[in-house]
Length: 60
Image (cartoon, rainbow, N blue to C red):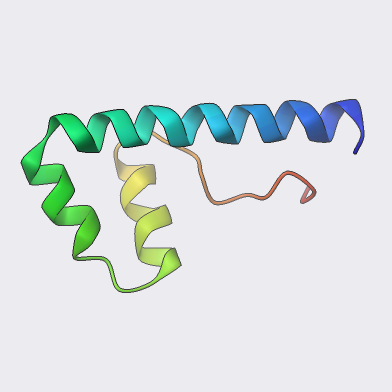
């Protein structure tokens, strides 16, 4: 894993941790996320909330 990939990895972990905190603090957001049927649905919803969780660390 390159340094750049590691930084992307850390960024994604940070985004996911922030997203989990947001969902845990909001029953409405919890309901929305649990209604998602696919990975793409989750990624798009997270994006609407300001989080970038779709790209994998090895992708450009």
